[in-house]
Image (tube, rainbow, N blue to C red):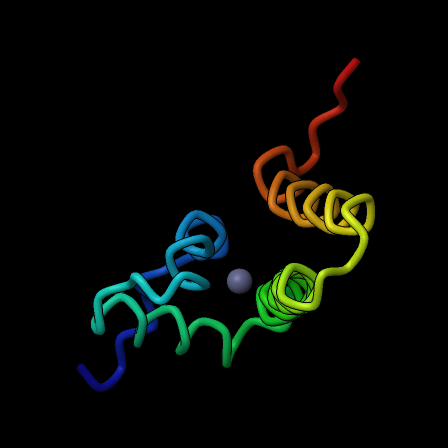
Length: 93
Ligand SMILES: [Zn+2]
């Protein structure tokens, strides 16, 4: 328990868990591991931050009756941010 350098979660796993994390659906154990990873990994922190930001904007937008086209645009951004994690390094088309 003391000098375990093997982190239970790697970046890819963190990205996989991101949806559940943001929905508050992670079990406490997993949540703890994820947050530990975030403390050590600026990349993932940045990513989680940007997704969180978009989600908050989106929620505020839907609550405050923002024009539908803006809501759609935010949803689009959110989907893209999430997609990025899945197609990292890929070159489509
Ligand atoms: Zn990471």
